[in-house]
Image (cartoon, rainbow, N blue to C red; front, side, top):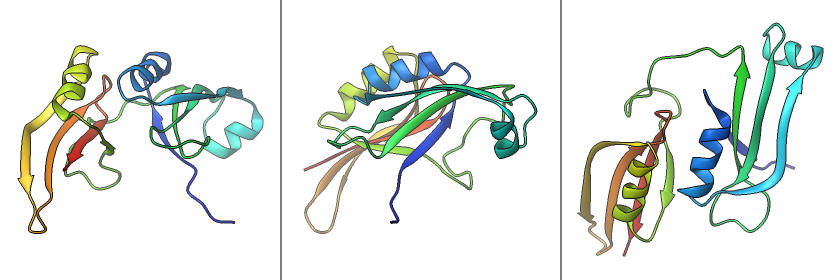
Length: 148
């Protein structure tokens, strides 16, 4: 077997970020919460006395329990530099939505942010799209897109 399973976000406050993804971006709980610690986790992470809490959320548009967005908080936590749209590595999570402007309003109202401007683009094949980059309350970059 070979399949994609999940993407992990390490949060400063996993409970708050989980609620944001459930409320604003329609992710659903699949009942898989985590409160992990022990020698096996220390070996896996190379962290002494690691402690992870969080939950797996089913991404919108999927009926089963995969793929998920795994949102964890670590103790101890390490704060890195803020994500940038052109930073090497994973850049953003993209969500196709019916109304980009409405979801952007919800993101901003829930403590998220906006990067750049909302744009409308017409492709050579006649398709039209609306795009905007936003951030969740912890600064992780999101792309919202709508196609017609």
